[in-house]
Amino acid sequence: MNYIGMDVHKRFTYAVVKDEQGNDLAKERFDNNKANFESFLKPFAPEKTRVVMESTGVWEYVYGILEQIGYSAKLANPAKTKAIAYAKVKTDAVDASTLADLLRANLVAESYVPTKEIRNLREIVRLRKMALKQSNQSINRLHALLTRKGIFLPKKSLCKTSINFLLKEIEKQPAIKGYLEVIDFHKKKLAEINAQIIELAEKDAQAQLLMTIPGISGIRAITLIAEIGDISRFPAADKLCSYAGLVSSVHQSGSTLYFGRLMQQASKALKHVMIQTAWTNIRLLESNPIKEHYKKLEQKKGKQKAICAATRKLCTVVYAVLRNKEKCRYS
Image (cartoon, rainbow, N blue to C red; front, side):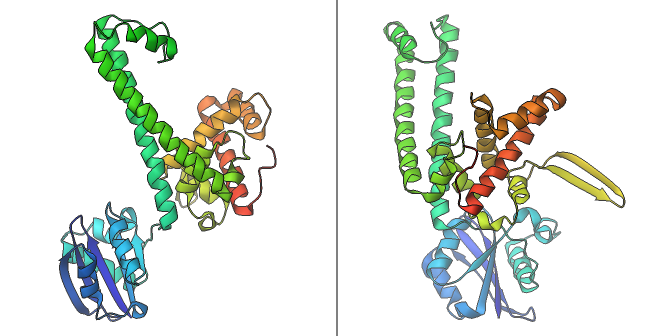
């Protein structure tokens, strides 16, 4: 068996090939393109070769090339690859060699590799997040401009009344027109993205199941699917809660056990949409388990701890719906 460690960079990759005894078979630096990867890997048959690379900002491109030419690769979690992070001598050659040795010893701390379909969903979900952020920034900047000019809107938000009011001020303040045009552009772009996501939700069986949970729209359903990926990688609901950063960190030494704050190494995007959905459940007029759980803890623990507990309960519901492929039973 051949073991290849790849230190992947934006424009080039440094690769080291080792045999089962740890002897170097090949090492080379080459630019990131399909032809170079094919040329380097040609002497090593795919069925007798294992590849590992770190999960960096450009891993998807290289991973895609390897898939196309028939090689499967493991993705190493940089946060857990201490042999590289704490090395005194740190070069591309050393990093690639260390990765190959870890792979040879079966000690690679793997990162989850989502399917191409999930990666595409994540791209459109992140595009929506960026468009929403830019829209809010433009609105906030307009409000700041109006405050500096001493112009106060009849309504806080940019509703029809406020926009009509601003249209009368355009001739006096040309910058206002520019901001309104930018806001209108972002609004239309966001509407286009939302329409695409909703269309995806209508065709996705998992999204349809998630939408039976109160508070989960088509957009939130697709966001959850994109961030969770393959639900089977979580053997229990607690594992999904941990991935979403909804469980306490645990420190143990001997007989001493200490529970700290919520875990920081988590999917922030998943945690955000889970908390949003939990608040939606709480604000619903109808009674539901999430709302009841929150109300029960609010008086004793306070709002912050109560919403964390309610969100964790919601996370277990999401897990059950996806794992069992059943509609939400309390909807």
